[in-house]
Length: 302
Image 1: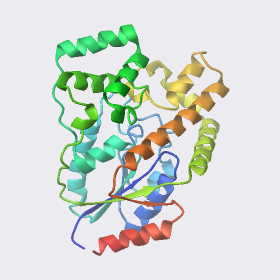
Image 2: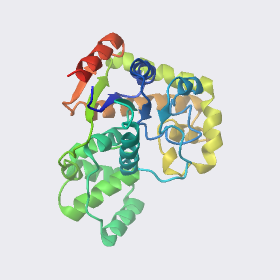
Image 3: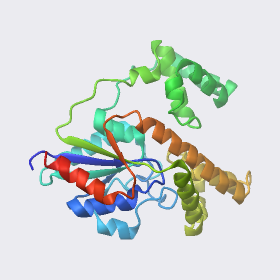
Image 4: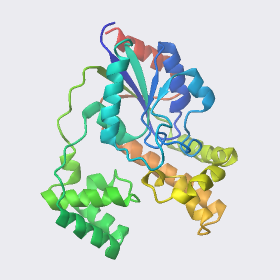
């Protein structure tokens, strides 16, 4: 086999990617690249369901716990860093496995980052002022009207992404989603995408159970340790935002836990909406380990 292959194991949060990725990596004797935008940060191991110390010993992982909470990082950074790493790894490996559920990070590696026009200072100031006066809900409604496709994909609680999409709409007269449909960049390696899915009821039960397990594992203590930094973008994510509301006295612990479960389920739906648009993904149940292994072997011998 001469062609270098990046295997991407993807799917919604809680579907069962982590353990299966370890067994695939062990089968093909290859490292794992995390494509989870929050597992990059140190100190968030419980809330991001990062690989455990034992799992990290089993297989060499990259992009896990490498950043301080205040460090800036983006999908563009991930694209650049991953391509450099793959160039090095492929010098003596034929297979590398990537796994995770951060849609834009995976897309950046596979297709490249979109090149958007620079937003003028005038429009940037205008949108910042509107955000202060009108609030996030009003801007979300405008985004729904101007770009319903991106509205269904974006985290509507992430004001920076909502505002940026509106800035692009006003700057160009085109939709943000339209400008993201750029020609795919060519990569010097083959990409094999494997998606994991479960019945919705089963997935939701797994998500609910995992949140309970996070609480028992010490999520509250972990969140309290980063509470002084709660305004950082790295902590603007499900699990931490809800627990911040509990710690600040806004919610009870019970309400925070239920909100984590609900918001995680909502996020899993957004992930599946995104992934289902990609015809290059071959879908399996996580229980089909043998079928997945054989599928990979068949493609590697083509």
